[in-house]
Image (cartoon, rainbow, N blue to C red; front, top):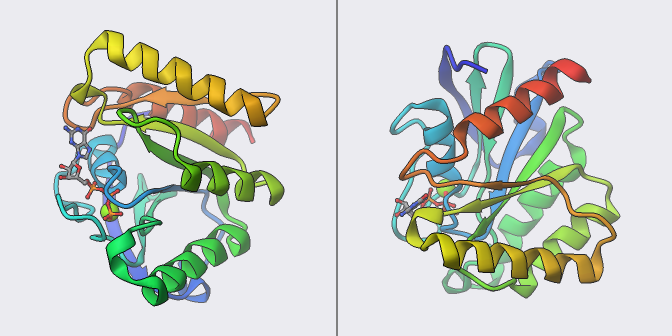
Length: 198
Ligand code: GTP
Ligand code: MG
């Protein structure tokens, strides 16, 4: 899929105020600082479209970006940022969960995982929540440029093995680097197929 246009539409803290209509949505979720906003900028080839930061906790709202005037990419706040305090963490959690559970336009959720790390409980718990609520999701490993090919292969294999202890089947898995633009074509083809085949 070619990205011909990408524009910011609205940020908000209320699912009810998300854009009306029934355009398909693809949302990006994962731990704070995993690279959600950077991935959106990489996919759209639009530097600065989504705000990024080296400090965790940058995105705190639900952000809608209209792509090709045909569908939305949705940048969500990260989960699990310890320094934020329990109250705000719980608030963000509720916001994320209400978006995921209530937004009928959500075609697919991309769950981002830092390719450098071993499986973390918080991500496993989040996947269980998605499974229990029958939310379609795919896994996107980020920051692959920070590892050697060997380390990356070993980490991904270990991650898949850990997933298979809990899941019968693996969801679609993508390897990406926003820095090197890795995985861009694969993700855009995947999104295109979902939009046009459903
Ligand atoms: P929150 O909004 O805080 O939840 O974070 P986020 O998941 O949106 O992460 P963001 O895109 O802001 O990126 C966090 C940091 O990781 C930034 O310093 C990015 O430059 C860096 N980063 C993101 N993706 C990559 C990548 O593929 N490679 C490298 N080397 N750095 C990356
Ligand atoms: Mg962000």
